[in-house]
Amino acid sequence: MAWQTYYEERKISSDEAVRHIKSGNRVVIGHACGEPSHLVDALVSHAEDYENVEIVHMVAMGKCEYCQPGMERHFHHNAYFAGARTRDAINTGRGDFTPCCFYQVPQLFHTTMPVDAALVTVTPPDENGMVSLGVSVDYDYEAVMTAGITIAQVNDQMPFTYGKLIPVEKITYFVEHSSPIIQLSPPKIGPVEEAIGAHCASLVRDGDTLQLGIGAIPDAVLNSLKDKKDLGIHTEMFSDGVVELAEAGVITNRAKSLHPGKYVANFLMGTKRLYDFVDHNPDVLVLPVDYVNNPIVIGQNDNLVSINSCVQVDLMGQVASESIGTKQISGIGGQVDFVRGAAFSKGGRSIIAMPSTVKGTTSKIVPMLDVGVTVTTSRTDVDYVVTEYGIAQLKGRSLRERAKSLTQIAHPDFRGELREAFRRRFPDARL
Ligand code: COA
Image 1 (spheres, helix red, strand yellow):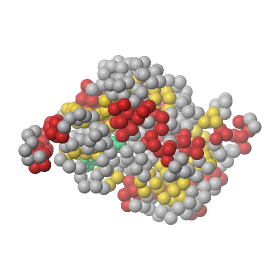
Image 2 (cartoon, rainbow, N blue to C red):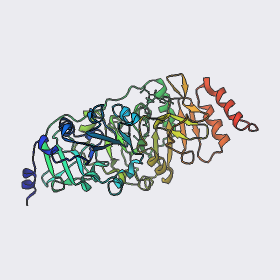
Image 3 (cartoon, protein in one colour):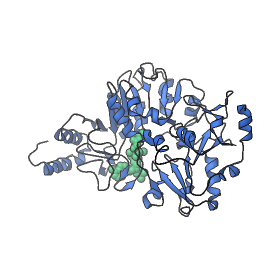
Image 4 (spheres, rainbow, N blue to C red):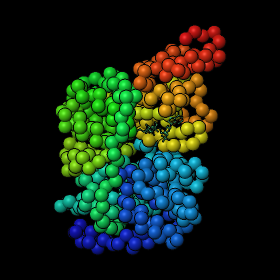
């Protein structure tokens, strides 16, 4: 059958489409800015028809109505990441959280978390009957490949990205609906972030390949890289900051040892500026997360520098990035994937960068992590820690050396307390 015939025959309305989802099903929703909001709205509007539908999602950028109070009989949210609109559900137990390195999520669809239905956003098909998952290929690709049924919102505003296209025959139903792609505004960068950015930039050399997390610190780092040459991108996600450096000729991807000349990511979050940049751009490869974030693949990039952030670091170098006490505030994301990938990379470095305090009142460098905190990056994996006060290089350093250099980059108001706490633990040691 010609792909055009298949596509035409499988076009239905959103109300018809969500009727194919049954009580007790596991439904994977397209990630981050790739969320098919029109389909999710239809699912929620039919909530009364369902009991115990499991909604599996990671960074949820939409309305998240399925996990609000009153929905618990119909939907059970199982998250890989907690965000502003899902934290409450996770921390009250109305929803749930599955700890998992990002690169391993697609594997779960073959093992403990088989997918009954995938809801994704795709572009209209190209002349060969292939659609693009656009800004979120990450786990969406494997969800489509393994799901019992896939319902795709065909959105002509989704940028067409290359790397991993899908033949229309892999999709069960199509719901055509044009709507703006969810956008992420650039963060506000203050003097603290600028200072952190400058310290991180001092660890970046011409020709390095970068992974940057999300938020003010990665953007501040990019601002400090304007004098570098031939930087490359192999990252979990990127945002508008990368476009600026690309247009300034700083990022060329020329020196990359893997995929030279190409930007490699598994999802994208930003404004229309970013989405226009990646649309039909043959230099941008948006690929599944089990490839991009696989530490072995990351390690094939020489001089890979990863930059991520955290909530707390203790004096031994244990990094907590996803919870405040027992409260889950985010997730592992790709932090550990890239910390370990950078360790495999010839000339690689990984940086954990954070402001030294929370709003000036609480030190983020602490003698011991708060009770209940989750260790994201272990002290065995950690490499550099950066604050606005400088750089602590921890890999290959003793506990005493770590405590000393972390104290030196703590906020001055807390350095005395940190030294005191170290002395209590190791009475005969000198810092
Ligand atoms: N104690 C108490 N509260 C703390 C805290 C601490 N030690 N550290 C941070 N917080 C609070 C902040 O005050 C803020 O609260 P608010 O939302 O009420 O203002 C909140 O936690 C988030 O902190 P903030 O520093 O604003 O977050 P961020 O946007 O810079 O993100 C992480 C920081 C750690 C949450 C984020 O980098 C993350 O999720 N990392 C793990 C995943 C990852 O690294 N992925 C990498 C690839 S994208």
